[in-house]
Length: 105
Image (cartoon, rainbow, N blue to C red; front, side, top):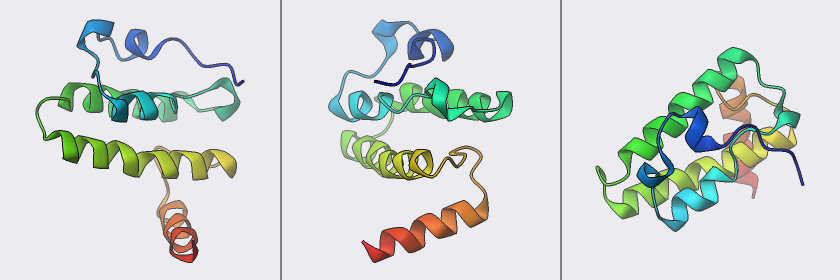
């Protein structure tokens, strides 16, 4: 099991009680950075901003939209991690290659 960086709630500076309580968040939060990601400080900061936004967006958008947004991010995170590529910020080439690979599936 990969070693996860500090707890998500600590890093995004939201108390655990304010984190979304839904399956979509639970499945996405498993993609919180791990040490093996070797993120630069800028990449980690981008991930922190994304996860903070997603946590704060819970309740502001429909549950279906939230589930779709989180669900769309998971495959991209997995794909980047498997290829040792930066998730955020993702280069245009990374996104294009991901879409080509996705189209082949």
